[in-house]
Amino acid sequence: MSDVPFGFGVPDRDPERREPGKQGDPAGDPFGLGALFGGLAGGGSPEDLMGKMPLFAELQKLMSWSGGPVNWDLARQGAISQLAVGHQPTSQAEQTAVAEALRLADLWLDQVTDLPSGIERTAAWSRVDWVEKTLPAWNELIDPLAEKVVAAMTSALPQEAAMAFGPVAGIMGRMGGLMFGAQVGQALGKLADEVVTSTDVGLPLAPAGTGVLVPQNVADFAAGLDRPADEVRLFLALREAASQRLFAHVPWLRQQLQDAVHAYARGITIDREAIERGINEAMSGMEGGLDPSNPESIQQLLGSGLLEPEETPEQQMALRRLETLLALVEGWVDTVVAAAATDRLPGLSALAETMRRRRATGGPAEQTFATLVGLELRPRRLRDAATVWAAMSQRYGAADRDRLWSHPDLLPTSDDLDEPMDFVTRQGLDDEFAALTASDAEDEPTDEENPEGPGNGEPDRP
Image 1 (cartoon, rainbow, N blue to C red):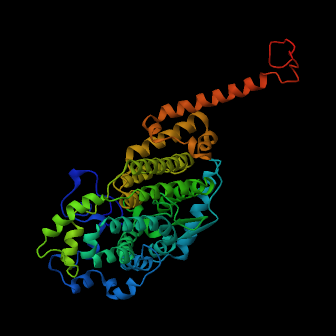
Image 2: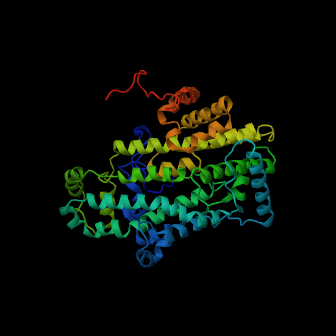
Image 3: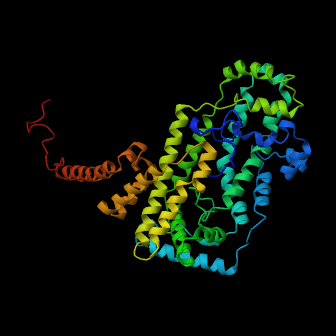
């Protein structure tokens, strides 16, 4: 899994995996603020910071950002600067190969799902293309999170501390865009090295109707698989085309995923009373107290754990809903790709297993949601969702399977995924009950057939 965070996720929930002073440890770096101040803490110099983060040389220009809680100019520059070494632009031959793979993938999928194609145009993107062309989607997803985090941190400071901490409180608001821009840029650069399609992170990031492969990363994915390049490309094209169908023709799906992320963001709170109790201890424990002009004392306070958010039951529910939706999307894609390719791709089993291992060790989707909201996607959940879709296909057919996407209330819940076959069995019982109810309604006499009304046949009395 990537060790480059977006800076929004809560710390690792498993205390056994925490190491003091490491990323993900609240005592070491809540919200990843060390990326902003760490270069000056511990005896570093401004030159050290400039050497580590050259983009900060234009600090005055960066501080003038007024486009929202994340400095997206900085994020773009940071991501692209990471990709400078080893970046390969796409060739015309790659564009043609991607277009042909996606076209064939759609033809195969037509035979296993009634959901029509969601691809209107195809594209082969370089890693830099992926960063630049997915920024609007990231903006929509991340800005509400960043805004809430900065607001929670600044509002949590008590009045007395805010007076002494005034310049830093200003930094939390004014430099919020800078801080998150730097960290988002690092994360996007890392993801761009790994993504193979536009839907690899669990959400569609390309402009609507655009099916995408990233040829350089497709080649990396294929390395060591001992399968023909065309076969690997077609397998990934099937996954991209299947995901595009789902998101294009289930109009509420993308919004539900984003709403779950934003529901988590709305619940971000910091215990003000704990801040008030601990702020004096933290400040008194600093040699010379808190000196807003001393970045080392700033880092010490920010790293004290005082600004660690508390996860609420509502946030836990949002994460559960998010995990279930992501698992259902991934499970459906696995199922329809297997149905389309089983008799056509000789290496399907090996390719599918490689994809499963990639997810288990932290693929782009796992990295994205772990660092955004601290959600660790569980492989078991993905297997349970795939079991539901495969069993629905086998027992009731593709049409009834895909009918579950017609409304969010029809989909399996997190509890349903605990017992996936029970959910599948209930679908048949529900259908039988609905058919029986409809039959009974047809058999009931109408008022014309029973002119004496709904009583016992006796005439009405005045």
